[in-house]
Amino acid sequence: MCLACVDMVNAELAGRTALVTGAASGIGAACARRLAAAGAYVVVVDVSADGAAAVAAEVGGRAVPLDLAEPDRVADLDCDVDIVVNNAGRQHVAPVPEFPPEEFGGLLRLMLETPFRIVRAALPHMYARGWGRIVNVSSVHGLRASAYKAGYVAAKHGLEGLSKVVAVEAAGHGVTCNCVNPGYVRTPLVERQIADQARAYGIPEDEVVDRVLLARSPTKRLAEPAEVAELVAYLCGPHAGLVTGASFTLDGGWTAL
Image 1 (spheres, rainbow, N blue to C red):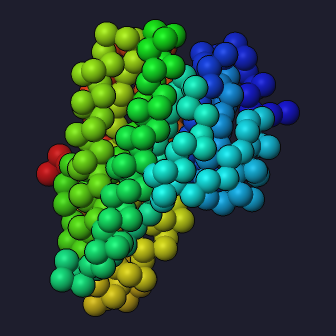
Image 2: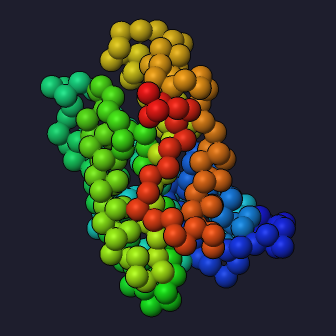
Image 3: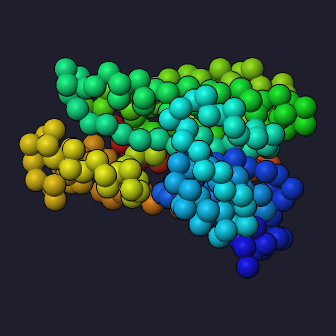
């Protein structure tokens, strides 16, 4: 049975359509599952055609294989949806003097310009219905900086600003826009950067999690994708109508320091 058919008593998003980017794995896949469990029909967007198809089949949704690193590809998306979860992202770790300009620009395109274009295309439909939910998966790095992550930090800080502008503009139309800001999450994105972090800091790979990833977090564990998805689901639900223009941390206390 698809997740969209489970526990319909609690299906607060029944009849809603959600578009989730980067949804073939990690946080995006967890969000797709959680929103489907709440009754939403989920459009699963990811550069991995096989991964998108697998998650879409699991949740009873629709797969859209698309490389959102090229913002022009947003024109190929049907953005007539009730919910947008902008999650697609990638990472590059290097000191600023060695940071490739093409990587810097690519990170901004994928994690700032593409979300802008998706939101821009979706808002008229949300306005027409008088209801909509936009959740931008930011990061603790949308609120804080770390060395060697110029592109990622710049993109996430920009996403925070974009989210606030959308929240202000959309407030009179029944549409909310918020950011979720996890610390390090147990995802393929985090796993892939461990070797780069080890090189940048000059330490063994098996010491990266404790000495780098969790160094500033009072809670010494990685977040799980399902934990992030629970917060996303709340922000997409009917009880969050007054919650907008905000940033919600799941960082184990990092930003409390």
